[in-house]
Length: 252
Image (cartoon, rainbow, N blue to C red):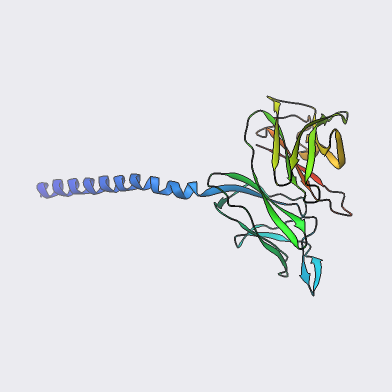
């Protein structure tokens, strides 16, 4: 009986050891799945989302966003932005749809690389909507970026100004349609405002303080918590709206 017990125990330990080796060996196989994911946020830069309704181009109004057949945002309106979320790498298919079923899309993005970080912006007007694919900038310290997402204004300058006085506008860079341009501001900055315009002159509603972008950043400083970059987004203007055409966010 003792001999049988020793044999059984040894066999059990051997089985457990083999199982452990198999489990450890399965870890690398999960790596490709993780590596096949990109981080993406979605932005609506189209002033109106129109489709044919009874033969007439009509704004679908309140819309939600579907990506690759899955709903990712319950509200998708001009100037709104989702948080970053994981998606499978490759081309993304975007559809803005209202509750009745009218839709704009599907609109295809460029192919996204595994491990990448992107902003996808729906821009344009009926019938020429498109998705602009921006690769997120990287860097350290304080930075300022401008995402050029306005088909009607395909080139723009951008820069900084003193938030406390609304003066001291200084051009720091330029961006072309479909590109994101980034400039370094140093290790840290304060009293910062950012604008889009021509030279040192901002366009209408084109200048934002950091406090206007994020009300908690009352001193207009960067980095602010874990955000080191002030991002400006230039979209087509929406007639009759007090919002835009420049929107902002504070990003990592």
